[in-house]
Length: 261
Image (cartoon, rainbow, N blue to C red):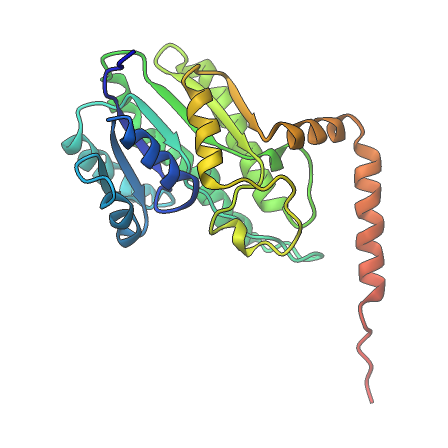
């Protein structure tokens, strides 16, 4: 059955999941606006789908860019049918220090960046001819505490709560879906130096997301095996945390002492 072309806005679409999602919706005949901080990356994505993908420079961490970005977006399209909030960043802490600036940087992108993007999109969502849809990319990392991931996991858990709460305040205006992926092979995860079980390609992740988004569920979690493992860990948290507490203690004890001569 042929569907009416939609207008889709995807943040953080210069690479990774956002780029794969943009390619999918453009292939369906939708008009896709992609945003990010690097116009070079966005232009590279857009050139593969001329006329279907439109690049838009937007740093989600900048509150002072909201009005200008909204005006530019309104000059491109009078409304938005689907908004996918995908912009994200990850930095790992170095225990036992808690770098406040690091936490702020991650929260600025993953949490406040989502708020800024929604503020940009609201008038265009309200102008949609049929019920619009907002989806936010969070993470399975928000399910339970992981080593060194205090900033990243907390920001994604906060983003998921934000979206669920917005469903209660804006549910009369648009549908909301929380997307919780596991490990996806992106430039961000390429920096990880630890095992990433059930690692998926961006194309595989985009296929799962787009297929399930069509049904407008409250939440999407994948891959299934990793989701169930983390659900079990939520039920049996003590062994998980005790294991990592012992590991951290052992690592600290193995650090060489600073001797003076």
